[in-house]
Image (cartoon, rainbow, N blue to C red; front, side):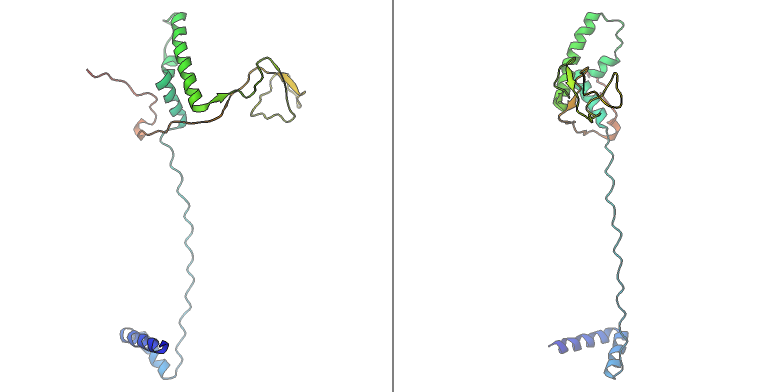
Length: 183
């Protein structure tokens, strides 16, 4: 069956391809047909690097600032000129801004102190103290003496959950949109 298939292929190939017909005729007359050229290896295409991640339309810093403004009127408070207000009026405003800002920070960052010791307490410092967690001040030399007084407990975030920006590029730098009351 193999030779019949080869003969059929040779017949039809010779019928439609003049070069193939010449090769078949040389083979039938006893002449050796020239060997077909070896297929050239095709170079694999260079790997395409993945596209660079798209730059976010809005920075997380602006998202945080917008959240603080929306929920605590944070920017309004600090942009307001306070010269015309009494200390009592400022104190009343601070109470609301403080409460609402604290709620945003708890929800988004779950802040907690770096050190559980109370401020003013004596703390023992391990050798090779991590400068990212503890900043040494005062009489600091090349080596610590192993203890010091806690001036500030520091803060660390146990999470960071920023709202996802869903606006358009034109509004990406808006911290608080202008409000217009329609009548």
